Image (cartoon, rainbow, N blue to C red; front, side, top):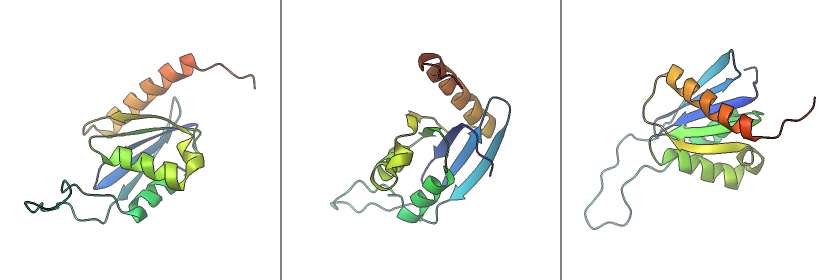
Length: 132
C-alpha cells in the first residue's frame, strides 16, 4: 500500500480500519481480530470481563501503520488505549509518531477520514514549518 504522510486507525475489539491519506486521496486496509466477541463475566471473579486484545491482532495493526509519519488512533472503546500501550512496549518508534488518541464512536469510512483530516489540520497549524 503506498504511504502518505498521515494515518488514522479506528479500532475496536473486533476490527481495525486503517487509512493512510493526504489532502486528496487515501488508502484503506481492514484487519479483523480472531478473538471471541463476548466474554461472560462470572460473579465474584477477578477482572471486569472486558476483552483484551490478542498480541497477533495488535501486531498486525502496528505493522499496517508502516512508515506513516503521523498517526491518529481512534475508537469507541478501550482497544485504542490497548493499541497505544502495545505500540509503546513493542514498537516504540511507531509510538513516537502517534499524535493523538481520540474517542470516536462508530463512524463511516468518510467520517473517519474527515475527523482525521480536521485533527491533523489543527496540529499542522501549530507545528513549525520545515523548509524542504
